[in-house]
Length: 258
Image (cartoon, rainbow, N blue to C red):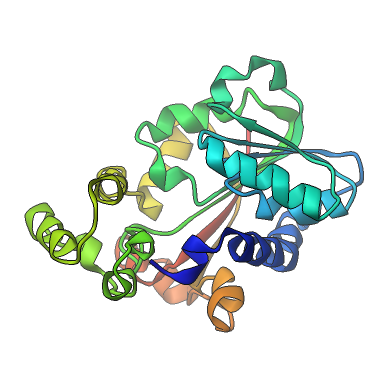
């Protein structure tokens, strides 16, 4: 397992840095971020993405199904002396939050969801009439699209493309690397719910969601914080080639309107 997967405080700070430097400028091109705006992050984890929004005076709410992550988020925000509300729940059970949000953030969440169409459709219940959704996810076929960085084995956590192997071979490699049952289940859940650019855009169209903007990255902006790599947008030429582009896209940024 890579160090940042174990050191949650480090992971929190890395996400906060990326959010401030890249997410906020990208979102701001489509909607000016003002104090007292209502911001929701679905699948907020430890809450790092929301810290810069709180620092700008926004009213932030983070929702995640993992209670342990919500506890971390509450603690980290208290340590930063920043206000924020964090809830351990399935967002779609929180009807009291419907139609409240100017901006909804879904960062690296969609690839974990099995019924993506229903998820995308339900987002409209939580955004204001003039609100937007910032959606980002790694293309499934990219080197670490299977999230193998969560593996406890240092070798496997740094091994690209193994998630594209046939299930029986992938399982054998994970077992040989000493991965436990919970880790393997999570990896195979992601493999089952794989998300490509083409699948996402097809689902958005089916659900009558407008894609206001799309930016594909060859080098994920978050890699600057994690690895010191300068972000690079995907070549327009490759970006226009369906399916092939997934192998070269480490992150997909979208602005959605309903």
